[in-house]
Each structure stands twice: as C-alpha cells, then as structure tokens.
Length: 177
Image (cartoon, rainbow, N blue to C red; front, side, top):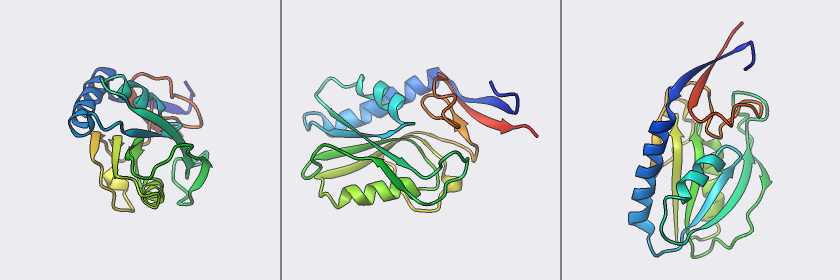
C-alpha cells in the first residue's frame, strides 16, 4: 500500500456477493429468455460484470466500452473521452449497461444517451455503487448494489491510478498529508 494513503473498509466481499446475487435475481425476472446484451464499462466494471453473468442460467451476450472522465485524478474532468467502442449491434436489443459506480453522472449520462440513439429495444442501467451526494446529472439506476457516502472508493475492480483493483472488498481512501 502507498504510505500516503490509508484504506478503510466500506463494503465486505460477503456483502458484495449477496448484492450480486440479488441484482442477478432481479435481472433474471426481467430478462429470462430475452438474450440481453450486457455492456460492461471498463475498466472498473469488469469484476462486477464477471461475477454477475455467472449467476445467469440463460444465454447473455457481453460487450465492453471504455469511457474516461477522470484521468489520473480523483475528480471528474466533466469531459468524456470514448476510448474503446462497441462491436455489437444495439438496435432492437435488450441492453443492460453495467457500471462500477455512478458518481457525478456525466459519464453514465453520456453513454446512455449515446446508446439510446442506437435504438435499443430496452436500455437499463445496473450499477454496483451509487454516490448520489456527488450527482450533477439525473440518472435512473434500474439495478443497484449499494449507495455509498461521498468518498473515493477502490477495490473489486475500482482503482486509483490503476492500483487496488485486485482487492476483494471495497474501501474508501483517506489521503494523508
């Protein structure tokens, strides 16, 4: 661990597993037999998506998109940069976007609006964590794991400067002076 950073556990891996199973159950009820297309938002959402799809007993398809508004900072720049696009057809598909965190809402709103223009049959948002106290844009989250306080989190795929993704629990960072 970095000497200038203190990690405080926020969400235990057992609670994450329970939330993943609950969310999968909700999605199963809504999409069984509909072959949904899951779009994982990279890089942070890949661990959540990986665990989530293993909970389904029906066919699903997966795509990834990489968007960035943070760079190497802890605050969003507000400017969205599409880094890696989609290869699948979205039109007339049931699409579920899988996010690690909905924070200000800028990135998620950008992505959802972009996908709406592709005319999906349905478009839903699944987020592991939600930070409503930081929200700048209104976002509807259809499937949610946890609402968290206004803290910078890491672990379970979520990083700070590409570190801490491998942690099985979710922590918040306290920066030491």
